[in-house]
Length: 93
Image (cartoon, rainbow, N blue to C red):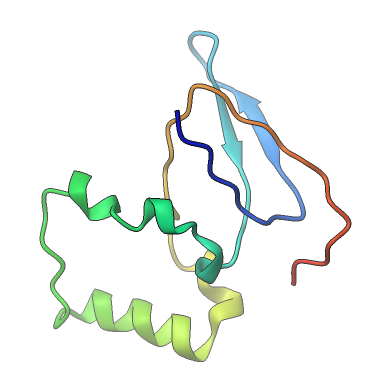
């Protein structure tokens, strides 16, 4: 089992409409995505088209307005057997 962590100042979870699972939501800076997850493309059947307008818009937002990135994308979906939210005193943003 692999353990990964993300810095965040808040976490919310809601019960799934069916079954015992929950869905958790949190925000974290893109730069803080753990190196363990950088191979995410292994599960993506599509190749990245670096010439597409969507790709260029994503890069532009990350470079020019990183604080607004969370408003303009749907984030990353992680599936986990177990999840914990640990409160720390460190300032995130």
